[in-house]
Length: 264
Ligand SMILES: [Zn+2]
Ligand SMILES: [Zn+2]
Image 1 (spheres, helix red, strand yellow):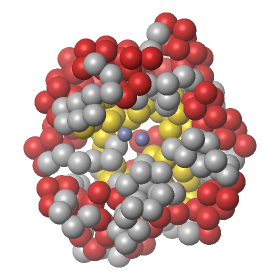
Image 2 (cartoon, protein in one colour; image 1 turned 30 degrees about the vertical axis):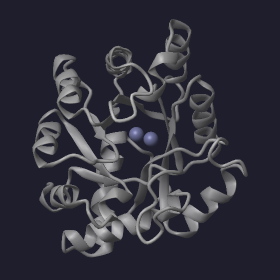
Image 3 (cartoon, protein in one colour; image 1 turned 120 degrees about the horizontal axis):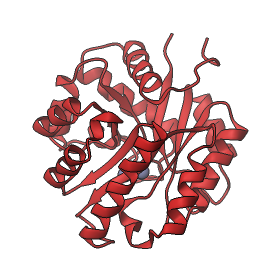
């Protein structure tokens, strides 16, 4: 039996002012068995929100971390708050963390420092790391290598790089998570990676509220729409939808240690 998992979504009130309940209901109705809610922000409120939501719902897990966009907000008080929150039983990963040199909302040097701190937290807590990388492929891989991130492993989320990057990520014990980008017409390099990857090394996500997959591109994204991304991946890999869901679900469960007791 398959378990459709949205391995990465942001459901906080900034994006869903109506609250998460109707979003979760629509996801369940669409067949989504589990959602990983990402707890990042300029303070630790979103991390707190993610852990609370995971406590309230069996089919929700949480991450806590520091996004590179907000690296300039990071201080020691946040570091200890995040470390404390990471002990919550619903937390399955540290992140997202990494480098975003496309927007450069925080200076590159601060992004690198915070990225290293999050790798250290993942190691300390023995949790996998969720990596965000944009316009900084070499720098991201260099830090993962320098910090021995293979000890913790994790996920390259919202994959938008090429096959050479994917190969190095797999060698560092990072799996690949595909967002709606793989459904877009011009994402040839990402599609090529989707075809090439070993069956047990990838998963699917929405990155809600961003990057709604085709044919919903431009809409506010939500976990229910992960179905479209899974369908396109199945087509690319010449597999049935059910087989793709089962494989990607098993990978997510293994990587994140998800509780799949609800799945029949
Ligand atoms: Zn991201
Ligand atoms: Zn994200």
